[in-house]
Amino acid sequence: MKETYEGSKLEEQLNQLKEDKSSATPWLEERTILLAPTGSYAYGTNTPTSDKDYKGVCIPPIEYYLGMEAFNEYNTAGGKNFKNTKDDIDINIIHINKFVKDAMQGVPNNIEILNVRAEDYIKVTELGQILIDNRHLFLSKAIYRKFRGYANSQKQKMIIKKSNGTGRQDLIEEFGYDTKFFMHTVRLQTSAIEILNTGTYSTYRPNREFLLDCRLGKYTLDQALKIVDDLDRQLEEAYEKCTILPATPDYDKINQMLIDINKTALYL
Image (cartoon, rainbow, N blue to C red; front, side):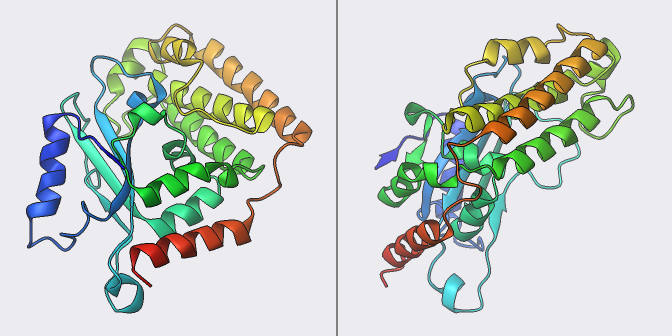
């Protein structure tokens, strides 16, 4: 089992979860089976001003399965109407059942947490390692629709010329468009192409220098839109030619894995 809390702010927040008995989820830190960086520090595209985000998976106590207690996720980022600074830390920890269901649908953030570099994981228990060891089960041609959909959403945000609540009006004023949304569009497109072409995935992006060029405004808006359109065509072609991945994940295998993990955690 790996458990390394790097950075005083992360350690402080996780300790608060453990020690705050008035919290609705005092069990959360102890029952988190997987915790990893997400966002720029996971992709290798972080800059000196990047904030730190973490995503995890937990298994709630038995009363959340058999009783009336309910838990979906813990999220410190909800409801913000301001831009994070480099000193901010956001933590999102998800119920394992929700995490697995979303990963089966190809939700990018869930696919990413299972494919970060081994040295980047903050916490991995024996049950968390089972998820990592079976990450290939979640890769299928279904990721095409999810990754492409998320990319198209980022593209639309990229070209908005007025304040949209993200706190990046400075980028729009300097470059004529939101270069960070451009980077995320390209990242999602090239990630999906990699998965469909190779059947594998690395969250730590091999094209991170290109992604940083996108983020830092190397391309005009017209050039950026052409790059996005070209990658979209490549993505469609990769999907049509893909023969190494199943059309959808193996429901029975994943479901049995989830049952086994939950039974072990709940001593059933």
